[in-house]
Length: 530
Image (tube, rainbow, N blue to C red; front, side, top):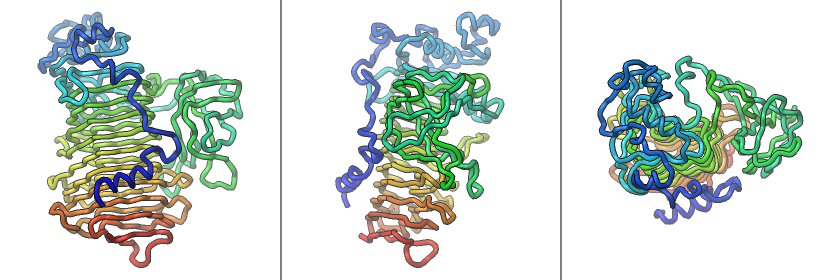
C-alpha cells in the first residue's frame, strides 16, 4: 500500500476529529501575518526586545556577580533575580517577558540562562529569522539535571505550572473547588451545577476541568480519574455553565456502575494556591517559535490553551513534554532527545502535532532522567493528530524503550519509526489500557512505517489484564514493517490478553498476526496478510 493510500486510510479515521470536535486548530489569531523578523520591526509593533533589557546574546557566561555586588543591587534592576549566580542574559530575558508586552523578540545570537524562562498568557516569544527557516537565535540552559528541582529550572521555558518551589519540596497540592454536576450527555456545551460553588470564584474565560472519577486504585493500578476534559467557560447563568467545547462523553453516576465513584464533576480553581504558594494557571493564547534550544527540555505542564509552538531545533532530555495541550498546534520541530521525544498527557485534546523528528541520544552522566518511550500518548488525551512524525532510535541505545505507545482514545498517528536499539522491548504498543475501565482506548488510527533490527517483534495490542469492559476496540492499523535492510523481520502484530479487540485492517510487507497466548485470535480480532 503506497503513501497516498495510507493517508487515505488515515483521513477516513480520525484526522478530522473522531469525537466530532471539528477541524484541527489554527495558529493563534494574527500569528502568521504579523511576526516581526528584526528588532526594529518588533519595536514598531510594540514588542519588547531582550537586548533592550540588557541581554547580550554572545554565548558567554555572565553571572550577576560580575555586574552587581549584592543580590539587592541586582534586584533593583532585575526584580526577578534569585541568585548572584544567575546568568545576566536569563534575568534580562525574564525582565522582558515580565514587561507586560504582547511580544518578546530575541535578536540573532546565543543567550545563556540558568532558570527556565516564564511565558505568560497572551504572550509571543519569537527568535530572529522567518517561519520555516533555520533558527538563528539560540537559548542555552547549561544547568545540570541532577535533582527534581533542577528539572524545573533547567528547561528552556516554563509554560504553565512547572515551578521550582514545588520541585524543591518534592510535593504539590491542588486548590480545586469540586462541585457535582447534573448528568452530562455527549455533545453538550452546557453543564448544570447541582450544588453551589461556595467560595470558588468562577468567571467567563476561566479554564475548568470536567471529570468523572474512578476509585483511586483498580486492581492495584492507580487510576485517579476516568474521564476528563479541560474546557473554557464562555457563559454563566445561575447554576448553568456554558463551555467553549462540547463534552465528548455521556456520564450518569449510578450505583450500578462500579467504575464511577463520583461524577460528573466540575473542578474550578478555588483561589487556593497550587504548588505551595504559586498560583495555578493554564496559559492561554501563547506562541513560542524560531529558536534553537539546548536544555533539559521544552515543556508545558497543566498546560496550554490555544498555543502555537513552531520552528524549533531542540537538544533536550525531553523534546516536547506537554500536559493539557488544548486547541493547539506544534509544528516544524526537530532535534535530539534522551528520555522522551513527545509526551502528551493529562487530558490534552483537540490539537495537532506535525513535521516533528527526533533522534535518541545517550543520557548524560549523573542525570536523574529516566529513559522512556519515544512517543508516549496517554492519560485521557483524545482528538490528537500526529502527522509526519519521524523517530530514530539507534543501535547504541540499550535500554528498554518503545518507539510509540498509545494509551487513550481518539488518536491518529502517521509516523516513520526506526528502532534499532537492543533493549528488550517491543517497538510499538499501540494500545496500553492504563487510564480507567470506563474509558478504554478506542478509535486509534495508526499509519506506520516501522523499521527494526532483524527478528524483533514490533507491534502489540494489550487490553486490561482482567475480565473488565475496558478492552481496546476500533483500532485501525496500516503497517509497513521492515528490517533495516528492507526485508520483513519477525511478526509485526501481537495481541495479548485483550478481549473483543477489533482490528479493522493490518496491511504491509508480509504482515502476520500472532496471538498470545497461542491459539485462535481473540473474539472480534481480524488480521489480513498482504
